[in-house]
Length: 110
Image (cartoon, rainbow, N blue to C red):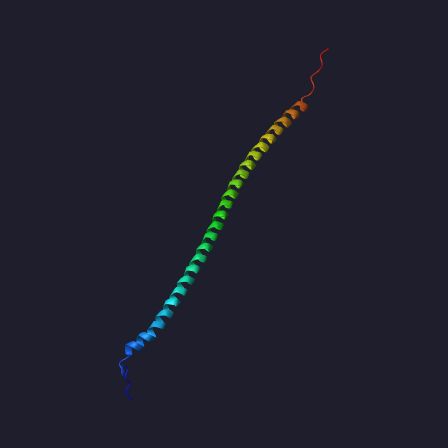
């Protein structure tokens, strides 16, 4: 069986007639794919910007928390110093009272 492709001389006519719908289909599929890819890129960029916004917010909150913790540590250190001063003063007062109470009264002069 001999198969002759261009037996009647209309190979190019048939090829072009069948290639046009294929080309149109491929072009439409390419356009749809391009549009879908564009939409996916858009959604991805929006998601990335939302994530970056959240990260920035969390970092700002962490900075604020660190600043507040540093202020609290400073206040705690100041309060501890005040308590130490009060304890020292109280100790001195107690020592003076002990000395004052332990001294026998001086004899009265007539």
